[in-house]
Image 1 (cartoon, rainbow, N blue to C red):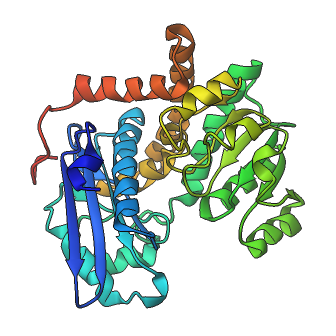
Image 2 (spheres, helix red, strand yellow; image 1 turned 180 degrees about the vertical axis):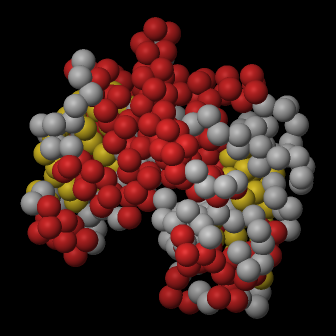
Amino acid sequence: MGVFEAIGTDDHERVVVGHDPATGLRAIIAIYSTDLGPALGGTRLFPYPSEDAALTDVLRLSQAMAYKASAAGLDLGGGKAVVIGDRSVISDDFWHAYGRFVDSLAGAYITAEDVGTTTADMHVIAEETKWVVGRAAEDHGAGDPSPATARGVVRAMQAATLHLYGSDSLSGSRVAVQGVGKVGSALVEYLVDADADVVLADINPAAAAALVDRLGVKEVSTDDILSEECDILSPCSLGGVLNVETIPELRCRAVVGSANNQLATEDDDERIAEAGILYVPDFVANAAGLIHVSAELSVFDADQVSRRISGIYDAVLSILDRASTDNLTPNDAAIRFAEDRIRREGNGVTFRHGEQ
């Protein structure tokens, strides 16, 4: 599959391939839009089975980042990077080469941590470029955005619960969390604090067992978590989990999670709606991580970050109300919500270095 065939009609502004034979770097940066500002999005490290798979992932993720930034009210565009590789063979020289690749875009793309990368990686990358956020607090950064992402997902769950039941309390709600990595584990803690009834699953038995032992939550197998009877299913692992095979197995009232690209295809939001399940689009529910790291672009203001994260609640309610009023799926309503702001407030031209 060629690059232009993969892009199709999505109108990405720029897709750039980086290769460094000396370190083995193979990376793709996709910039979907810079109408609202420079494109900010994380760098995902993953052993993709093919270059086509990596290209497909980065194109979908970068588009979602543009919508995420817009829906969150941020003056940022959408971009993403994927690095094809295995952490076991990656050195600091590898990340230095990647940092130079990011720097070559002169600020049109700003990177951050994502699946497979860490704040320590961002520190090394920052030795080659200033266009990086998501560094550790001791490295003049905002620290790990995972807890912030989890807080935002909780706010989205509260909005969904209000829409469904007329009350936004999660007390007594049964929530099934698929994946308890950095975000999922923080989410479980917040849900327990909110007096929710939590059941979880993860491919890492040790990660799941640790939360079961410490918090007294219930664990089920990864094969059973999607069909667990619950009020809210929360996908917090990799994307594509909601598809033609899994949707008929769902036994939840709502889906609200942190994973990106939860819908395997564009038709899956219709399938979820036909099943009578409320879907809160992932790029709205998980926007708090972006809110958190983007605050590094100026003087970090914890109060402002907290207010923006709380705003996810209002954004979700607006989107769900629009979906009901206009007879749209929540995903279509959220895309229109984001695109409306890009058209209304965007500059209509691509970002140029120094025009922030």
